[in-house]
Image (cartoon, rainbow over all chains, first blue to last red; front, top):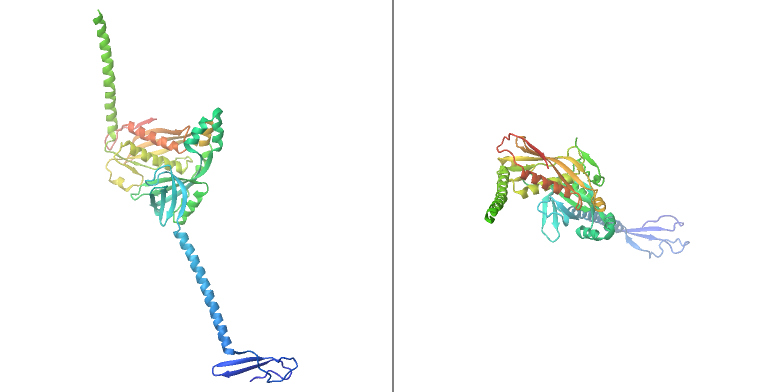
Amino acid sequence: MQKNGASDVTNHDVSVKSSDTSWGVLYAPLLAGNTAIGGIMDRSVFPRNQRNACRFHRRAGMRLLVALICCGLAAAAQNTTQREASESFSIRATHLMGFESAKSNCTGTLSIQDDFLQFQQTGKTSVHINIGSVRDVFLGEESRQVGGLPLTIGEAAVPYGGGRVVSLFAHKKYDILTLEYVDSDGGIHGAIFQLDKGQGEVAKRELTAHGVVISSREDQSKHTAVEVRYENK
Amino acid sequence: MKTNNCGPLMACVTAILVIAVVLPLQSATVKSSGSGTSAGWSVQVDQVNPGTLDLSYSFQAAIYENLVDELKKTKQFQQVLREGDHRASEVPKLLVLKTTVEKYTAGSETRRAVTTLSGATKLTVRSQLLTREGKVVLERTVNGDVRFFGSNLRATHNLARNIAKTLKESSWPEGDQPAATLTGQL
């Protein structure tokens, strides 16, 4: 037994050691003036070493929890990365010409699946090339009439040249994505796709992320709206 | 008297008929002999050289692709190969088609639709057929444009069609060492 002080001491820490476990009691008299030692020891008794053990278990538990959270976060991040890598990049595109056996001027989906760049015409089988065969990517811009032939005929039918006014507003800007790639025989191909405005940059970024090296040559088609006459002398 | 008057008339009609029948046959023979000069030849289409012009790459690629397609359509050459094709080295009679852009007028589809008169996209190229050794067999200046309907890239299709048509109508000396250079303009 331990006594912490004289009569003015109000708290007594009492501990009993039994085998490997040390039992401790914090004794505080009920009344401030009551200094009698050996008062009713009806205070909570708890194993001192067990408290340490408990603390140890709590720390270990916390560490385990932190480790689990870290693992969970890492796994989630890894999953996201893997999903991003394997998740197919896919955009709507109009194939203008040159991409393998795909039909010209047809709309479909341009996507990246693993190491392949593929174009799937709506309702048809897809055609694909290896991304490694793409030698260069060019991005341009083009303003085109919307509505196609029906609108053109409609414009022509409007009296007093009213169709021309319609034409003035019936155009839309597109991105033109041009890919230079080689086939299995080494022959050079030029594939041209028409994408919605802003999608060209996304496609170019995706292709670059998949290892396509883009040369310093720039596509000048942004200047096509300006009527300029060039001549070789 | 009446029979005497009919004789010259009949002779005249007969002569006209003979001329009408014989001349097309003769021209057809000439044409077939002309196109026969490319028999057994294959062609390798090189990428378009933009020269000093700021021609967009999409236009260059479009001319190249359309040219390959149009030359295949004419069936004038045994094989139509692309630049870089390894098989070209195995082809015995190979010609190389080089295309250099000389003039380019960038048009606008919207302007064409609104004004009709302006906004045409025009291309002028110099097409050369060369032997493997680099000797010019044929040289032509060809135009292609889009004036009314269609996108700007349609000019490249028209140009390629004109080049293929020019090559089909042209003839060049037989043999690996051509003696003369033919030049002209379409």
